[in-house]
Amino acid sequence: MRPRRWPGALALVLAAALWGLGYWLEPQREELRLEAVALTDPAEGAPLLKPGQTAPGGVAYINRSQAGCRVRVKVCAPELNGEPALLAGNLVEGRFQEAGTGGAGQEGWVRRAGYLYYQNTRTGDLLPPGRQTPAAYTAVQLREALDPDQLDTLRDWGAELYLVAQAQQEEGGDWR
Amino acid sequence: MCNKMWKILLLALTLALLALPAASSALAQAAPQDEGLVLWEETIFLGEAVPLRRKGQSLENLLKSRFSEPGEVECWWMSPQGPLPLAELGKQRPRADCGYPLAAVLRQPDKPERWVHGVCRIHVASGTVRVWAGGEGIGTASQALVKLEGAGLTLYRQAQLEAGPQGGVPALETEFTGLPFGVYTLSVADGGLEPSRVQCRLGVCQEDDTVDPDRRTALVRFKASGGTGSAVRESYRLGGGS
Image (cartoon, rainbow over all chains, first blue to last red; front, side, top):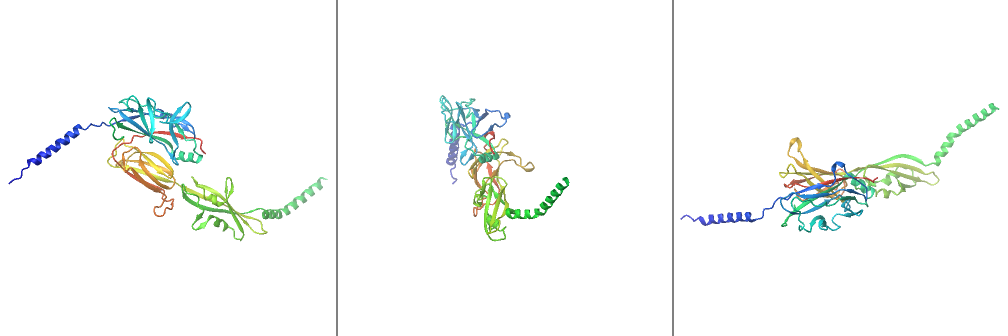
């Protein structure tokens, strides 16, 4: 007597249909894309900094995706003995203030756990498609307390600041 | 009259010439005697202190051995701030090749002081960490921001796409140079490479934690996992240093 195969085949078809349904129902996640906009012209050359002095700098971001997204930025500065040698911030009434520490207002940046987070009270902190953020910072300061040895050390390694931006879908999920 | 003056002048000159060797000998006995240059030459790793011992012999004993006679010997490092004990030299951590002037004096009863001057020459070797990332995940727009932490430092470098030798498979490459000895951790600040953290040693021997200037290069390998870094760089020139 030959065994009946149709229950097994039916189970396979059912499983495939369920898998397909699940794939179809899952929200399709679009690739988020942020474009960095430098606020200083690189053709002007690297600004000169002395300890305690500030120079213009800054980066803003444009959302080049089809959907709104949340944005955060990591400022990566060289550190000597655990202290950043370059500080990103803003000149407020002539005084240097670290980025994200002065309150974001209606739209701006807030420092949290080592990141600068884009905040916008009107959009629920989302950056709409095609829109540009305000500058994450507008000035860079060389730490005042650097001694000549540390300054020489930093000169050898190069005084460079890197900005790493990440975006998150409106519904949440990983920062990418 | 004029003839008489010439005779007196000639006599004075002769006397002076006769007295010169005696005067110079007396002067030499009164002044400290220089025994010449002692050379203590050593290569250290950036971050190390000036070694005061070499091959079982101390710098102090080496200076003392320059005197063949017994007596009380005192040694100094002639620092820019004035003479300092040799122990102070052992606290110096030079950042570049340099020479430290040394001095020792021998004191004996009823004899003039005798001096030895020398230079302690130090060569400073610094370390380099090379970063290489390859694999199928490498694309034409690939880049990665690599973070190096260790020896009280945090530095960043952007690894860029480099063509392989003889037009081979391209890879992301960068390097950190001028580093002091130490144990370093490398990680990727903007993703796209695996593993997330790699440790390496510069100069430090794993077996006994001694420092060897010959171990000045380390190669760290990552595997590209398909992501592309997006870090933006801003550069600054520094003024106001020495």
